[in-house]
Image (cartoon, rainbow, N blue to C red; front, side):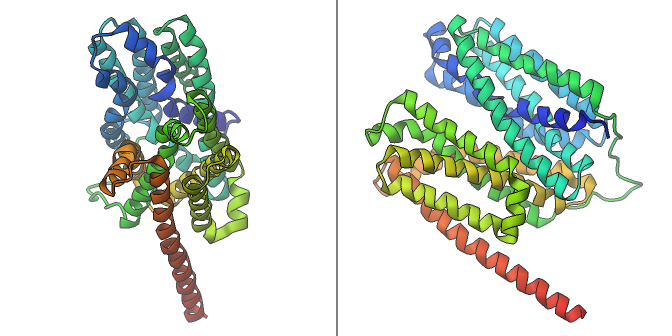
Length: 390
């Protein structure tokens, strides 16, 4: 295995995390450039890629049975590069949105492969470590590209789209350092095996984690305004602490898993539940920073751990389909986060962000009870099996 394989696979994940939000610093400038455009269309510039990622993730799973992953990855990166950079040359909001949809198609082809390649080339503790590194450096890539896009936005609304030239760097790494691999064809007339039911459970769990996690990005500015804690600039700094927390725990994931063992998921949920409880009950800026950082810690643990569980639950030839399912649920959770949480607040007549965070804390509390019970039952079952075997 060549020394550049790990950096190459990690770099693929960095491309996917910046798909939609990378050009968010230029959104106001785009609105000024197209003053007659419906505000909804302006917002769709950020969210449009997500609409295409889900179907193309499943298409990616199918195409891996026809062509090699390296060829499919190169095709996805070409679409990513051309649509990402090419959007700056558009002169209408409709054509700009078309390029953003094409970007989502490229990401939909690339994202499942960024995770399934870890499954292909690594096993055991090294696989968990690589999942952690993939999550950590994806967060790091998000920070760097957001900062770069913010700087480029000072030169006009078109310039930030050049951050997508990162796709060219990744293409070069993939071309030279990723093994060609083989086509994952089914042998003979063997029927396609069903994905185990537990995978759907993990996928729904990951969607739930994203729904909870994304409530910070979508609501923090309004939360701070409602509680007189600061303006939009400070809210951006607070939100960035989720990424700092996520990077830290993703890098230390193997050590944390060795320390917490089977209880890593319920304990992580407990930490996130405490953090959301603080946000719902306290009105102190330092505590807000600490809470947001703890929520980032939680996400940095749960995503890699659940992904490893998904991969371990299926046979190698099923990993691409399993990852496509989980990726789709992540984006569904992201999409539903503001809609569901706002709906709960309005339903009970308490449309404040503080109440929404309290509702999340209650939901996490219920999840903690179920996961603790599940771990205890699993341990008892394993003990019974060992006793019967002896």
